[in-house]
Image 1: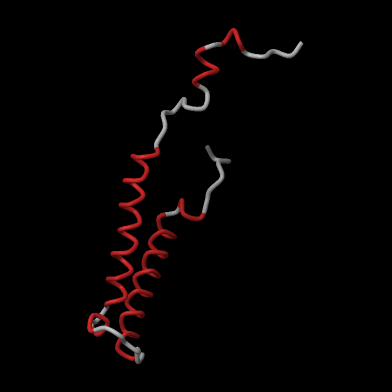
Image 2: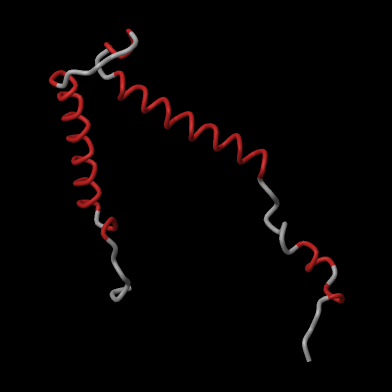
Length: 95
């Protein structure tokens, strides 16, 4: 166990540092929303944090859509080896 390789995020302190950095960058971007002049085309874009909410909803839709898509295209675990397992006598064996 002592010579087991340790990765960057095995240390909880590093995980906390990344999370704090993420929170700080989100807060900074929300503050910049007050400063930067935006050229808006619809009244929804006037809302504070509109792009944060829009991005969150977009990413959530991608995740939910991928779960639904997985249910449609998912195959059984032995899908590619099913024929080989059911007929072992027909396997080609090189001599």
